[in-house]
Length: 428
Ligand code: PMP
Image (cartoon, rainbow, N blue to C red; front, side, top):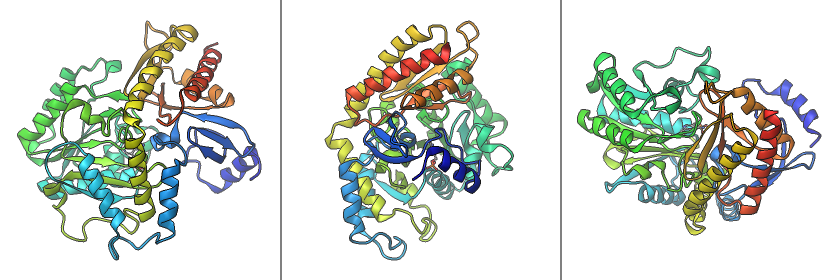
């Protein structure tokens, strides 16, 4: 393969710099929660390809299912010749998604495409144009989803204008001193000042803010959103692309609240490393568009469908939902200890739902000012010591835990020991 340095030089001249990479290393091999680079260095992986690998790198069941499918057919386009794995995955997702109403599922390829389609379907069903999204949210990098995404740098910088009829409401976030009550007052005011309720098709929310900082939406907020949607005939879309498939200890994060959304967007850990995404929703809503209105050449690729069915089996049969809850509790305990020892005046918050945990850093506890520099140093020092980490948050001052739920206790503790060392060096 060549060295990391040689590959970095080739990459710099062949790939646009807009494709950022957190780690200056190139992969050679990966298994479960470990990865080896082209120079033979081993890393513990707390990132899992950005929450894609809840079942780990190359889960044996997932790889076997994909290989078996590859020996039959790899692509026909579901819009031309249909195949059973698409239907089987749709059936499986309809049964897993919360709520008693009958459901249908559209399969696409990426998370952004799932969000685009959820909005299209909501518009077709309601006959309304508007969408309300929240501060700090992340819904993708296509132009509609960038319009929904609530963070300028680096995603939205210099690439507007964005589609019209997108409205922004504040996310209830302790960092900004915004309570659920404040957020709801602002949302109700938005509906009096700019966002005419009868012109709103959907409210879209991540039940746990992902890129925005791993902040769970309080149950009262989700309940209130459900009520507001029901009052005005608005659809509630839960973007579970990062929070789904066991990350929070449930199939879908919104299940913790008991609130049933009308549409759910899914991707990432659904297929253990294969590119597939979907929109799961109320059958009447999902059927709003006429034949030909939905789809795409690769949507619901058969190899990815087979991988997804196997990943879902693995989550179920290996008890990974309960494992996520246990992993999350362990991380919260250990991160609190590590923070108290290495950086007592710098750990602003440790939070999360199940195994979806983040630790947030401040310059000092008195001001609470976000410390993105410390966070960057921590990530860099961890990588040098063999631990892959990724930051998150509107201010880039949190580190999120997306370790495979299949990782052993010993490997997790080995990674946490590196985390402690790296934090101590980053603070010094
Ligand atoms: N929504 C959420 C909540 C996400 O976390 C992401 C990806 N980080 C997306 C949408 C976009 O998914 P993709 O990168 O597959 O387009």
